[in-house]
Length: 504
Image 1 (cartoon, rainbow, N blue to C red):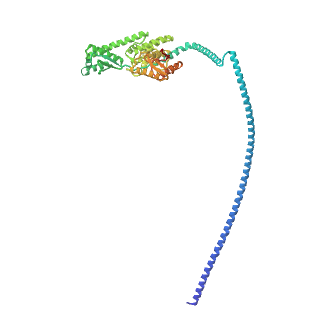
Image 2 (cartoon, rainbow, N blue to C red):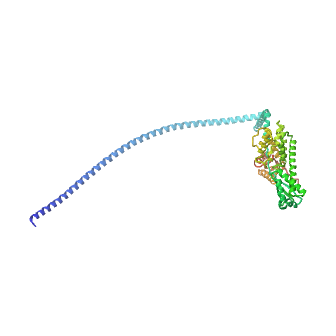
Image 3 (cartoon, one colour):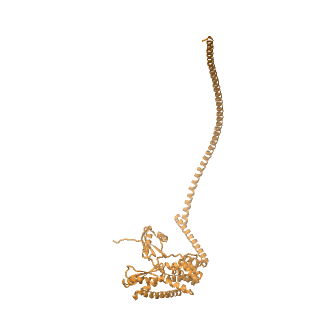
C-alpha cells in the first residue's frame, strides 16, 4: 500500500473518532441541559402550587371567619329572643298563678253560696210543704195533673176549631173526600170458568155423542163452535169455549139431544138452531130486565143486548150481569147521598164492564172495547169516563166516575161475591195464623169467619193491657203489607187473666 493511502486512512480514522467523540459529548451536554430545564420547571411548578395553596388557605380562613362572625351574631340574636320570651313566660306564669288563686277564691265563694242557697231552698221547701200541706212528690203530681188538664183543654179547643173549620169547607169538599175515601177498597180475584159440565144418564151415551167415526161430535163442534171433552170421568162430558154464549148454546143443545135420544148430524143442527134462537131471545130479555130493575131509561137496543149477554159471562168467579146490577144499585145510593146525578151513576155502573162481553171477538182490553161501544151508541161523556176510568186507565173527570169505581170494588169485595179456590182459601188462612203467631207473647191464633177475623190469644204474663193494643195494631199493619185479601180483616187480641185455687 502506498504511504499516502495510509496517511489518508489514518486521517479518516482520526476524523471519524473525533466526530463520534463530539457527538457523544453533544448528547451529554444536551441531556444535562434538559435535566437542568426540567428541574427548573419542576421547581417553578412547586412554587406556583405552593402559592395557590397559600391563597386558598387564606380565602378559606377569611370565609370561615365571616361564617363564624355571622353564626355568633345569629346565636346572640336567638339567645336574646329566648331570654325575652322567658321573661314573657315568667310574666304570664305569674299572671296565671294570680288568676288561679282568684279562681280558687271565687270557687270557694261559689260553694259557700251554693250551700247557703241549698239551705235556703230546703228551708223554703219545708215552709211551702208546711203552708200547702203537700210533700214535694205530691206537689209535683198536682202540677203534672194541672198541666195535663190544661193540655187536654187546649187540645179540645183546637179540635173544636178544626171541626168548625172543616164544617165551613164541608159543603165544598165533602163530595170529593167521600168519593176518594170510598174507592180505597181492594178485591181479590180468582180464575174465570170457561167450561160447563153436562151430566149423562150412562157412559153408553158417550159413544152415541161421538157417533160413527166421530161424525156426531164433529158436526156438533162445527155447528156450535165449542169443544166437547169426553174423557174417563164417569157419566159426564165437558163443554169448553171462551165464548160464554156459545158455551151455553152447546150445553143446552147437548142436554136436549141427550134427553131426546136422537143424535145424528141433521138432528144436531136442528136442536142447535132452536137453542141459538132461544138464547138470543133470553139475552134480550135479560138486558131489558136489568135495565128495568136499575131504573135506567133511554138505552140503545144494542147496548141492551150487550147487557143481556153479560148474563153468560163471569169474571173472577162472579156473574157480570149480577155484579153490574149490584154496582149500579150501590152507585145510585152513593150518588143520591152526595146529591149527584143518580141516572148517570147507574148508567156508568151498569155499563162499566160492558166490554168484557166483546173481548173474545175483538182485540183490546175490556175498557177500550167498552169505551168504543158506548161512544158508538151515543152515551153521555160522564158514562164513557166511568167506563174508561174504573181501572184508573185515565183520569177521573167527575165524582160520578170515582163512585162507580168504588162501587165496583165494594161489589167485588163483598164476602161470597166471588168464588175462591179451596187451595187458595186454605193457604190464606194458614198465612194469617202463621203471620200473627210470629209475634212475641202470642199463645194461640185462630182465623175465623172465612178469614175475615183473626183472634189472637196472648200470654197474660208476657203481654199487658197496654201492649195488647199495640200488638193488634202491629199485626194489622203487617197483614196489610204482606198479604192480599178482599175487604178487611178484623184483628182481635184476647188477654185472659185466671186466678186458680183449690179447696182441700
